[in-house]
Amino acid sequence: MRVMRPSRGLATRRRASVAVALGPLLTVAACATAAPQGQAPAASHRHHGTARGRPGPHIDALAAAEPGAAGAGTGTAALPLAPAHRSGGPASSGPGPAYFHTLPPGAALPSGAQCARWVRAQPIAENKGMNRAYNRAKGEPVGPGFLAGDAPQADQVIAPRINGDFTGTTGEILRWAACKWGIDQDIVFAQAAVESWWRQTTLGDWEGNGCPPGHGPGVDGKPGLCPQSWGILQNRYPYEQSSWPGIADSTAMNADTGYAIWRSCFDGYETWLNTVEHVGTYQAGDEWGCVGRWFAGRWHTAPAQQYIRFVKKYLRERIWTQPDFQEP
Image (cartoon, rainbow, N blue to C red):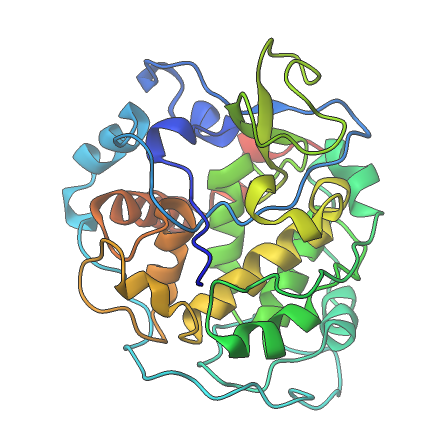
């Protein structure tokens, strides 16, 4: 039986980054908060299943301000189910690519070790001081069946690559994940800004159940509630339990897990997306469709499209380079 992993609805996924970006436009209190230093974020597939609630006012405001941004994602044209990844990836030589672009479905992906060498050859200064302890922590492999809801190839060729085996600055970690999973690095930078303002300390999706070990209702500061979503990509614990506590303790594990899931979608392994509410037909090769599905758990539905527009807005602005984003 296919396991469907529910995702957060727009109205319940207001992030600290949204509050910073939109400030007075928000009419509902943000649900994301900063975790105490040293507290581990949890692992989760929060991006499958039914989105809850309607779009929040912060997304509505962005959409209204940018009518030209509407419509489906503009990533690579849709392709059939991709073949399993070849091992190895590009040969190692010199300082590596100056920029990591999206690699097509089934492409040979570079190893985490190769990406680490390339990223460290072009250092990025730390701009999120609160992440330092998390940036020094490595992750660990996930258990079998981590991508059990997807086509079998996902657990055979994608899940075994997840390990969070990198340390560096926050920008370097995000660039490492982009390299390892073959996704455009600026999409990664922009999406992480939307999710957490690049803060691994971010907690979200406060609920009365689905709590990770040691973080029962009330432990993290909200009586009767616990955070289900953790870290720089806001991975959701109830649906990513075998990656806990790595996605909480390690920025690299959080990003590694998040973009492994994106790659499973991009390679065409999330065929369940055609069995639930969807707009158009899910197929491999739509990078923006897979970004939107992280948020909505659905394929190019209205909540997914609003999230895509928000990420694209931050990408156009290069928000991570702006002065008010810097917290060294």
